[in-house]
Image (cartoon, rainbow, N blue to C red; front, side, top):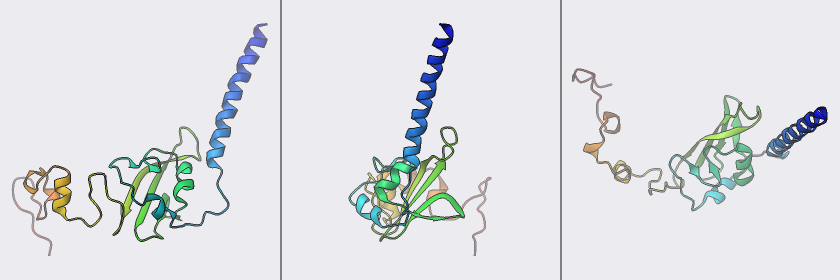
Length: 170
């Protein structure tokens, strides 16, 4: 009787494992045509880029990459940049950077970063868009030029430690 119970328990675990593999394979099933398109422009039109998240529900940091492609299409891939997908067929560019999820599945990757660039790219939820003046960006974060706290955000020569000014690059 004990052997039958162990066998039943093992079969239940095996069934759960097969179900997990089947659902992972359905995520990995890719269409034959992976030709890059400009569909991302129409899908993301009017959407706001949330800082640290991306475009929630569409292309979001942490989401599985195979769930992103059906929504915005495929981007251009380059062998020199593994897991980087360049969407550059529209008036503005989108770059989706993924990271392999080695813990769950060798072939599954998650979105790590979302980059927008170029005139006409969606603005952030704070209302900042590509090409906005620096003053608007600083106001949107609640900082002023004098209240930034770091020299890297202020245009001008950097200072070395000890208060001496570094030579200006010429």
